[in-house]
Length: 392
Image (cartoon, rainbow, N blue to C red):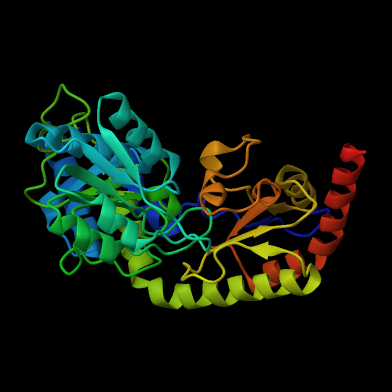
């Protein structure tokens, strides 16, 4: 059937990414003839075990970690929960019952933090500045000798703002707390090296880096206390029982190596495209508000609010033009209350509910940016007209 219009434009890479061809090829044998259970002792099991061990070693290498410090998970949410709850439950035995985090975390971390509170822990959330950066001075006040775990994301998934993780990690270590960082949006975008940096635990997710959904990893530095969330198996030294997803682990290892090897070159490309898209939007819609613009940002995320609109109507208008974007975290789509991240930054409620996140990646080209810039002003006018009609 012949095409009836231009190719659609995907600007939602922070939500998920397509699986790379190299990753599919690496996984294929373990979805076919090499189907063994890595806990089995026969040849099929040994083959699967060898592939799993190699994948663990490859992921470790991309993080500057040791092989036994990598735990495969079902994704970022499980990794975050393992880190926050697993560490806190272990540390409360040492009478460290406080948990420190931030109000701009992904809901995977915030949900785990709320569970800490439900189990009798004290939660302290750090202050956030207007540009979306966590204030280091608030960490100095919060990190006392009763803190078990401190969790601060490396790159915010809605604004792209890079958080002062090295500084806060150092403060946490000085206070005797275990430091975790959600690096789901940071991996492959900023330099991460466990051999040089002071984080204790780090989460990453495969489908953000062109690996399949349903696979992630947790770096757990040797000696870090952690209680397992699940029970019933001895896999992964008892940290995460259950038969391992060998094919997905192999895919994650392949994707991790590729994204780290390409980080600088791809980062420069995405930053150029992001900056051009931002410039074009501000030129055509001068009252647009770019969130986090004055702070260090990862190169792939642009969060912008258009006064006089609602994100839902603008996103629908973009979709009808073949442009995929989001209103913030894809994990809370359908929410009409506005972004918790923007609220924590002190953004006005009308702007918080008008935010659109455009996230760039492997499918983004110069032509994508040009086409979005061309259609954006008319879509904004339409969304404003719809808002005026609804208000009258």
